[in-house]
Each structure stands twice: as C-alpha cells, then as structure tokens.
Length: 567
Ligand code: HC1
Image (cartoon, rainbow, N blue to C red):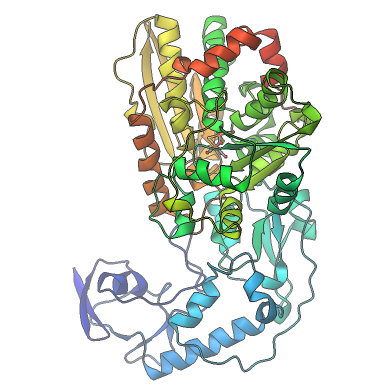
C-alpha cells in the first residue's frame, strides 16, 4: 500500500488506482463529465483536471494514475479557473437553444451540465453559443437524437460499444462542428440499433431521449369514445418512486395503480398477469422440445432489444427463439380479443397502453408481427411526467388493487423484471408439470444476481436440464459465441439490458449498478411476499384457458400468443 496527499489528506492506495478513485476514498468529489464507472477511460472533457506539485500541466484525475508521494490539489485557484473556462467552452458548443429552452428539455431535472455548473461554481458564460444547426434524428421509433445538445463526451459511443457490444455511434466532423452520429449519418432507425436505450442512460444531457407517447395518451384519456386500458411491466413498480425522490428499490405497486386510476384509465391491469401466461405457453413449449429432442437451446423471446440483436447479428439462431410473443404483446392480444368480447367492448374503441421500463417496447409494439395489439408504450419516465403533470402525490397515495380479470399475478410473474427471472419462473412451472410433484425449493439462486452471465443445471425427472442466463448485449454476444463453439444448453434466457428490465433504457436516470441492485432486491421481495409463486397457480390465467384458449399451445393460443421472427 502506497500513500499520497490529496488536498492535504493522506490517502492510501493500491497500484493502478487513478487520482479520481483515490480522492473518493477520502470523501473528495472531483467533478467529471466524460467519465462513467462502467465505461473505459476517455479523459476527453478535462473537467476533472487537478494540479500535481512539480508538474507544469494540469492532469485529468480520471485518466492519471496516482503514485507514491504525489501531492495533489483538486481545487486550487488555477484548477478552479481552468475548470470554469472548460465549462464555458463546452456550454458554448452546446445547443444554442439550451439557454432559452432549458426548462422544457427532457433532462431539465437530471442534466449533468447543470450539476457541473453548480459543482464548479460557474458564474458566467462569456462566449457566444455556436448554432451547430444539425437536424434532429427522428428516424427511430424508439429513440430521438438531438445532435445540437451533444457535448461530444463519447459516453453513448462507449456504452453502445463496450456494454452492449453493438457500436452504432461515431464522431464526425472537426472542431466546433464535431458531432455524434451514426454510420453514414443514416439515422438510428436505419442502422443496427437494437432500440435498447442504454445510450440514454449514458448521455449527460438531453441529446438522446425516447420517442414520447405521453401526449397521445393524454388525448386518448380525454376521448370519451375510447376505452383505455393500461398494463404495467414488472420492473416499473420498483423504480417509479425514484422520480419522486424515493430511494431506488422502493416498491410502489399499489400507489402506481391508484395513480393510474386517477389519471383516468378505464382499467388498470398487470403485465405480470401476462408474464404468468407466457410461462404457461413457454413452459409447455420447452417441455415439447424436451420430448421431441430440440431444437436446443431454446431462447427466451420477451426482450425486444435481444430480438433485434439476434436478427442483426446472429440470424442463424432465429429458429431457436421461443415462438412466444412477449408478455407485453400477449397482454395486448388477450385484451383486444377475450377481454373485449367478455365486456362487450368494440375492439376498435379499445386503446391498450403499456408502461414499460424499456424503449425497445415502443419498437416491438409496432412490429408487423404484432397486429397493433398495443397502441402506445410509455416509459417509466414518461409515466412519471404524466403523474407530475396531473399534480398527483404518487408515493403518498393509498394503495389500490389491479382490476380483475388481467390483474392477478404470482411471484413467478413478478421476477420477470430481473435477469434470471424468466428462467426461474419457467423452471418452477416446468418442474411441476413434468414431474407432477410439488417443487419444495422455489429460489433458484444460481440464476439470481447481477452478474452478466449465469449458468445452472437442474435435475428434472432424471434429466439434467442445462440453462444459462445473460443480460447486457455484450454478455449476450459472448454467450452466443460460446454456443457457436459447441457449448450445449437446453434453455437460455437473454435480456438486452444489464441486470434485465430493471436496468431498461426507459427507467429513471440514473440507472447504474447501484440502482439496478436495489431494484433487483425489491423484485425478489415482491416474489417472496406472494402467497402463490408459480405461474400455473394463477387463477385468472386458469380461467382464461377454461373460458377461451382451451390449453397452452392450443390452436387459438398459437394464433394469438405466438409468432415467428424471420430475417
Ligand atoms: Fe420486461 Fe417483460 S420482463 S420484457 O423486462 O418479459 O420491458 O419489466 O414487461 O413484455 O412481463 C420489459 C419488464 C416486461 C415483457 C414482462
């Protein structure tokens, strides 16, 4: 262990640590902009410069290793002056309209530039802003890119490349005209984007955000001829409260239902119901493949970012995908058929809205394979905006229950929101259906947790079922390479976002390792607190089969709940 002095504080450090990391250990916060914990070091913005005794030039703390005996000053007069100058230059090359439209920006409450201004004591902007004059990129149905708001920190480039293993972004042009763009400036909707939205979490400003549906949803809620139903995804209830100053992992299921009723939705239903339904269909499909000898591995099919990834990069495995639609889409299909018929509602008058932690769900709902069963998809952030707009004090509302007949869910449906959850839910049901014995231990620990790739073997009636789980697309890619090289599995869960849907691109900002882990704990807490924890115990799902679908994988179930993805 070596020692150095930072602002007069002695700090012990291991070899290889940066000044930024060492400073954190003695409670000194050095402001950063292009730096992010889950990304490689870039050292481009220079906001984190510090002064090192004996060195003429200031050094970026994020990219400079600390060494024995160093004497570092993090806020000397020179450092403070340089930081403020750098900040002013960044602001000058930022969107000219920021100074006018800051209040209406998508990141007005979470803009890191504003935070930095406070952290460095910025008190003037002397330089005239440059009007870059780039057009917004609205080619994607999920994500909007506003290049004029980009500060070229490169975080989205590194996130897309390093964490998601995709790499659709690049920098173009030089000097003040430098801009982030896509290959050939084709637009995000015309390159190999998976719509996962992880770039939104990486962006410090409002240069990337989801395509908003909330104004359209307001219109629907006002329209008296429309019957507007809403479904809420498993991962939303453990994150929504963060938009109302609560801690990550605060569970607000009942308050969210109450809030949605106050917003004026005619029925408030649960995507977790459809997750249980998915398990009935997917579990039956898995059992069929085990009986028929394949094709293996069977891949889960509920994450639309993952579907896009396999379509772009591994189309040879498309036939391995489960034929099940995602719970979001199963919900829409059942709502517009069974529920509408049972309640005498004209399908044409029914509007299905989803609240999802995911930007790719916007893309999924519009896919040709999906029959427009879901009309609008709100992200968790968009629901937060609507609740605020309506003046609802969400976290202090009295809890309310979901509406029947698509509101019941088991613990198995709840854990879909966490990486490993779909696998665990499927195994709980497949085990009991195959063995006709009660499964005593419901917690499949090896598929839980935040690691990017997890593996587990499960004994079912003398057969060893080999499973694997991956979340975050670069982990997904690694697992696919392993499979390509001959590793054999029966069942594999793939989720596009790190940690699963709880880390989705539509979740509150910040979404990082810490928030994802807190949300994950909350998901398993919901499961543990449920009386029924296996999807086949869901009474409303049982009734749906009795009244309408017949049996899992029946002809009608196939027509409504299954699909095929073809390159
Ligand atoms: Fe997900 Fe799913 S778990 S994909 O992560 O299978 O978005 O939450 O709604 O459809 O149920 C997302 C979450 C979600 C679907 C379910």
